[in-house]
Image (cartoon, rainbow, N blue to C red; front, side, top):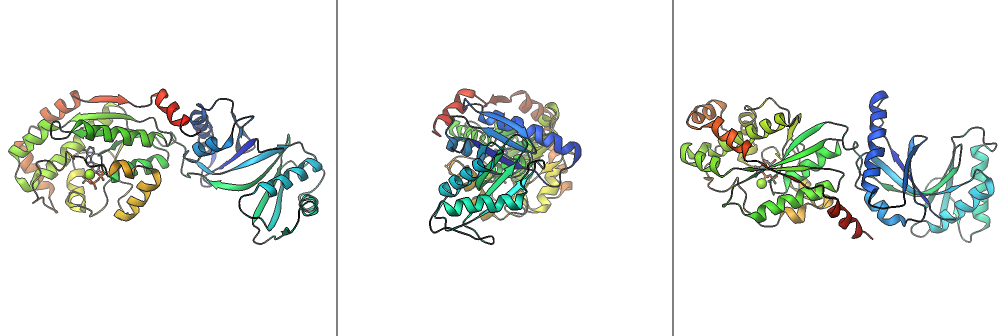
Length: 401
Ligand code: ATP
Ligand code: MG
């Protein structure tokens, strides 16, 4: 008798009706996709749960992958037995013996989802608990704060016995919230913003502004690495790299120094919105956090946002830098983000940027900028990378074993 199944619990309680069905179907597809590189598994949806049948597969790597999938609330290793009391008793004993840490106390919670089963859940609790007590030493029942909680789910075709529940990533399954364009620099913030947008079910494409020779190939590599990291959360993110040098030199030559940052940001936003429109994406995500730097004051955001009517999603807007750093560490982007690199936003830029740039002034100074010409040139020069390379994915899976 062994743990041969993983029981996956999901469910944003607020989801109803059609949304819920779409949620379940998408989650099932995503789990299958993520687990595909591990042969020999079967994933199916039964009775409001998703079950992974492990057969002979070692569970640890499977659980590692499940941890990253949005939409999963928690999951547990499960022993599947026939609907017979003796089998349930043996499985519960095994679950107590295998439970993590030292177990001095336990409790049994039975759910008889299959009502025709002849023994009611209260009696099952007693009979299974009694069997465990009779076959162990120094263990007692504690219904209030047990070291181990053994759950027994009686279903029509089988009974599942589980113990420890592992926390899932939460959120909504990737692909349930439409697609948006992530403005991805090599910094700490924007990858975290991308992660949070993905957590709410958004699919992403990413755009990165690159200013060779002032920004190097290495800066580009760094962004590619960040996209790969985000793809580990079930993304299939395409990366669009925009040549930005000509625009920056033009702005440097034509705009007053204290408005160069604002105008540069407006150009980035215009290019992003145009690309989003061309590719049928419905929004733009950024790593802005209110008041963090001159470009992220509400005045700046107001003026930069003037150039698009696309929704601009700013998941970090109310977060402190330390909170963002914590999250970056947790999701594994921090180490890459802090590698030294040149940011196209900092080259040439004078230090006297206005913290309260008005729309009126931005529009006035942009009269000297060839907005359309540079917008079209940038779009035409975009290089698109598809990083959903299966051999790469397979390699990272091998590392798990
Ligand atoms: P980050 O840590 O994400 O770089 P930041 O704190 O450095 O953010 P800014 O440099 O002001 O802040 O950038 C604000 C946002 O603008 C970024 O979070 C990102 O969404 C976008 N952005 C900045 N630089 C680039 C770039 N080179 N390419 C694409 N998007 C960019
Ligand atoms: Mg930055």
